[in-house]
Image (tube, rainbow, N blue to C red; front, side, top):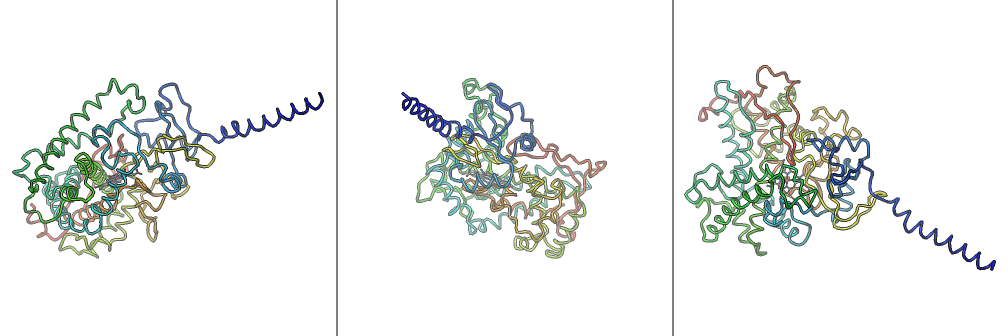
Length: 505
Ligand code: HEM
């Protein structure tokens, strides 16, 4: 009897210990801390119209890795370099998928593009094509003369608009610059060029892409509360379907013409992206080709234009920094010609300005959400499979533990620094990092450097009259891509020898 009770005691003791280690301890190794969750909406109430700012504030309370339930979906948000490295480097492959948002059906033709594709063979093939065909240095160089011509068009445009001291609206000018550069790469011609093959279709096509981006910039509540998908309460799916059909119609026509041997610009000598994508050994279906083409327009046009607008705004607010950049340009370029691409490597101060601008004004402050395909352990936390992962690029760039006086625009912090923006420095991640890193980052940096160098060298810039520098509005608007809430309007005065502008005015 005594033996039996001792055995029972031992059995209960061991079972309790087993239970504790099997159930209780693993529960302690649980999800990261985060704000309270309410039924159905989760933590949505804690997000303002500028979610990157709200999430930065929440991270001050809950830490650099946070859990939030938004609607019905699990999210984690990482807000410092160490946690970003865990997601984008240590566990890169596990976090390399994308949440299957509704936009993927329409904007990327059934998730056939790069940006919204889930991680797998198709995605890897498209990224390989980017690395070996579309964004090689040789390919980017082959479009160099086109970029140079676009810079001259931009100077012409600004000279025309500013003639007689008129105020210049900057946003459409930068947008025209970047969309023409991308358009030349995709179709071998400028967006504005009238063309027998296309008539008005070209402009309508770009218009539809712009509309699609605008729609995608809205928060689609059906992505977070899937049951609402049936009702499409915000009308988002309906609008996306319409634009997607327009885009598909145009691109189908283009592909048909190219297959017949007709290019958009018959006498273009450079090989454009449509030709490359149609001639690959690994045959892509039409939906994937369309997906890649719209990826380039959606990914490359607004983001680069917005970045330049932020940079010029900062320089207008900081006239001493602008003057120093102009002195550097005068030393390297002189005043008798426009900036050439070959000048760009010799402008270290300009490069520091651009890094500082990427730090404070990343065009995509929350990047593009990732998704983990299996359970992952970070620190003591278990991140369950199918969690949406957000890297708060904006908060990382303003982390006061890393950056002295983080809110000050001070390019000198990058003098003699080897911090890069392309994804190898985790405290500055405007293009993300790892398998999902922006494939267009070299092109984007080049466009921003070249564009900014050209306008600073060709014009002196000042704010509109009656606006004090310290009163310039530096707030951004809601969206995946975040422009200034108030588009920049400024005064531009030519500063090069007069014959450079003669043909423009
Ligand atoms: C200043 C300009 C730009 C910025 C700040 C920017 C930033 C980003 C960021 C943060 C991501 C998400 C990275 C991640 O998921 O971790 C991304 C993805 C992407 N970007 Fe860019 N980008 C810019 C320009 C461009 C250009 C010029 C192109 C192409 C012409 C481009 C094409 C793409 C594509 C296709 C993706 C999706 C990559 C994937 O899902 O694997 N971007 N970009």
